[in-house]
Image (cartoon, rainbow, N blue to C red; front, top):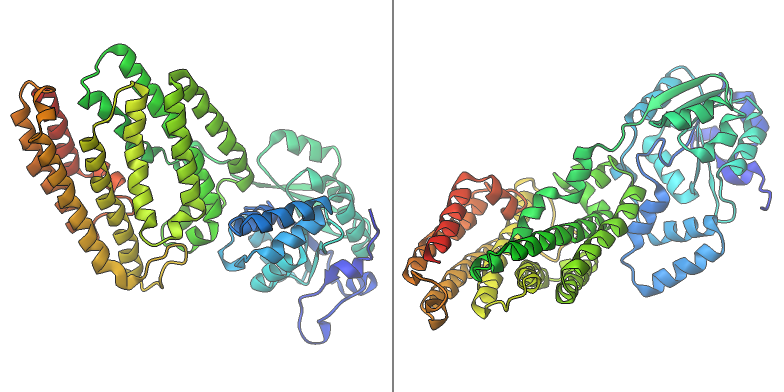
Length: 501
């Protein structure tokens, strides 16, 4: 590794006569007390800037990804500089560790110098230091040297002296630095890592890092969204395929779709970090808030997807093909289609309908064209309600047009009208189905199915009206599961189908 002078990696962020570069001697001579040096990734931040910049730039196309692989071959420092230049990170939106911020502010109140020392690219480090206004200087990677581990240790020793600083860090890369620090501040939740630090360092103070809870993971996986996969059981109901082997296949299909959907939810949250952090409620999502590290999400995605495909393969090749189509469409939606006007609505409705097709493929039965048409109109209505709710929330909070959707606030009345039109088209399709010859041979009492129409009309119309009244939250499906009237409607509709059979 090339040796770089510390002055090439260090700048102050002060004002007036102190502004500009300082030599190691300048730093030591102006210190009132021993300086505090703070790491960035996983320490001051509840995230990692390399991961942040990667996901912030991931949608820039194949040319960007090719240049990223080229940058990686030139070394990690060059990769960080490349991704930093290709991404836009707002320091105000990043999740900070409040305990570390408190430690920094306490040191400043005692007249100590505080320095930021990070393996992240200088552009990110400088922006964060300027935003916080708490640091007397910044050590950072510069595009040629990755300031991590031994490299960071040697630079700090040259600038501040052996045992001439206290250091706040969080990981194995910080072990060489703690071994030369007067005191170690360790941000961790690992007993094994604590024992390793204690073998190298003198005085140690621990800053406990909360482990990602089961509740946080369930929220990230969006377990509550699994109810949508209940559509897989619709062909079981409409085809009257109640034999145990069909029920088992439907259950396996439900689990496979749920795991596949969770993998895409994680991917979507990683891509949408900036937009989620700007959203009034989505900013609380585990990745956006820093509750779960981004790296954990990257690991979880292939595990979930692989498990889903193992289950799919145990059902049938046809079901596996449908699951693949669903996954491909959801990934396309996450990367590009959700930003295309009305295309996102059609795709969302199609994703719901694919669940019905998947349920039919698992049994296997041939899905009715009436059922597929009914599903498309019903879920087009609900997708429009979802967009209506999102825009209404922005209007009520006086927020600008969404940056990650191709809709404007002035579109709200049109979206409401389209939702109502889709709702009544769905009821019309169902009425035509009930009056068709296909029903006569499938049900003992087909005339009872007419009772479904007023219930459908009531439920869909009420959903549109409640969205207009700002009663429905972000997702109409989740709202329906919590809403007493919606649950009663669902029970009556299932009961009618069973009695008619």
